[in-house]
Length: 185
Image (cartoon, rainbow, N blue to C red):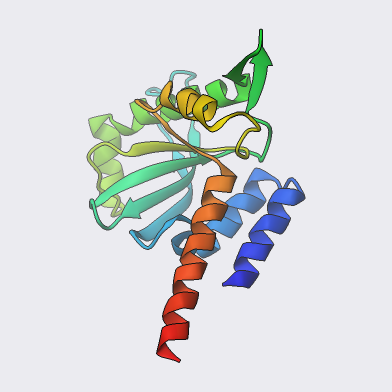
């Protein structure tokens, strides 16, 4: 497990491409994102250009089934980039974050169409209204209060997750497994 964590950190430090991060998450999604997920779909195409705001087909990065809620969650992966900047001494989210949020909201609009729900249900992907999760960048170098406030400004529509959040969760899971293994020995 520690090897997986080290490989993830290597990918982040090397500024891996989104595709590389997606492949790594697909291979290790339960360790990285939690045991509550029991199915993953990657590179899922939404071929409904008439429903899309830009009249195009769209590709979803990572669609995960949450076994606890029996629903699906969409994870849009972006590169490990700085996600904040300062304007007049006030930290703000970079435009890349807002662009990705708009992308997710467009996906949500498409996914909530009855025609799309029926077609995906035929493929075994049944959902009510998928939760939207944006995975981007690392934890910014601002105060915890400022970071909490920035996150809270978008939490109603999309949950913002950093790669540092995922890494910390992985560390906790590895520590838990280590504790259990040590107790059994």
